[in-house]
Image (cartoon, rainbow, N blue to C red; front, side, top):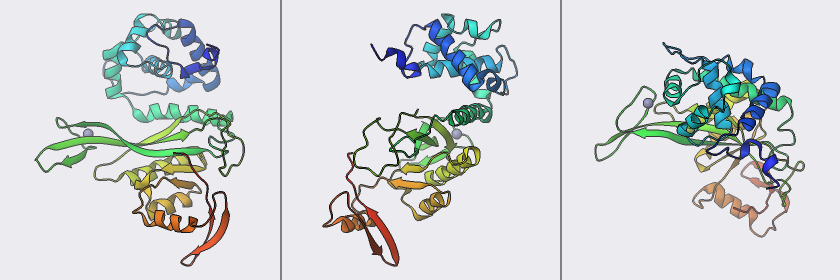
Length: 303
Ligand SMILES: [Zn+2]
């Protein structure tokens, strides 16, 4: 109970909308992030416009931020009048309207709102002090957003199975801030005490047909650096990304990489085990691998 006031948008609003919370959140977004101005930049290609794009953007953004669990729930909030005072005389969108808008929306103009919010958050020092032990850590990972046998488009990944089935899928790579429990610093190399930062999504990049996840991830990383500059210090990835061209490209961008490898078949995992042999955790030493001089610091990690 004592935490309720501090939860902000982290606590889902639930089935019954609180008009006060919607108004408070919208007022905060308007004053801190100039939400109204950014929403007016939202574009779409609808032929018949019954509800203006910025009204739809407002309902979607405020609704999703307050954790509407489905479009049906969001529609219930609209019908209950939760957004009435925000949009004044304009009509409010119901589910069908939101769907039609989404099909014709200019996605780039929606991402521009995300970019603007993140730029303001950085200016307001939201991420100062890093997200994990003083470092700002961002996870890169691919995920499938839909898979079907019924329809396809020019952007689909095509999977032809041995039994003759053909499946079409869309995949994206996302970059999201990783955060760590405040105060639990352990024995890790640490720049300063961590603090709670929001686990924001910096961007997503669709995987093009026949393109690998790693290539899409690199394109995303380069685009994010182009938009936000040095927006993170460390990138964490899974074993799929343990490829020299990717690691070199990320280092060339001035970022560190943490690759999570567990499979003992990887030569690098065997090398690490060899380096660690006979040493204590917490020990730092310099050694050679081939012609490279490497500095090794070993510490234990809880999985
Ligand atoms: Zn498609």
